[in-house]
Length: 149
Image (cartoon, rainbow, N blue to C red):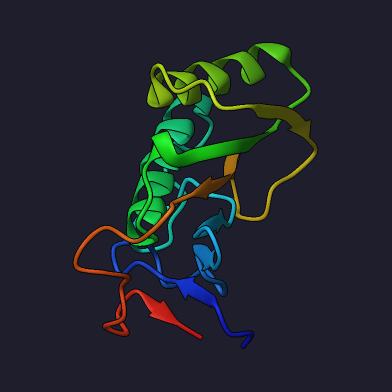
């Protein structure tokens, strides 16, 4: 692995995903998340058929992934929101949940309707880019439970 890159795998998120949930790099402590999906800790898709319910789970999982990488929603520079739909009302529904989660932090975002997403019954996914100038004390996760190669 390239020096200065840490892959983050929070133990609170499903181990079914074959990838890290976030990556952090030097300099500037850039954080790039994988698309947060509407999966519970066991890897099952939640709120099947419910765009808002899936968006809420997605945002909870995004918060968990960011926290494990030393960031919060207010550190996010940009998001991309994917919704498996051809209905603009579904796009608005997902967007309303995402915007509510971010509160006053109105980072740039792209909202996209797509044909299909990666997990069975998945309707919503959100990926983010964030930045931390440094790790909060006592320092970056290095216990092996959240960071691995």
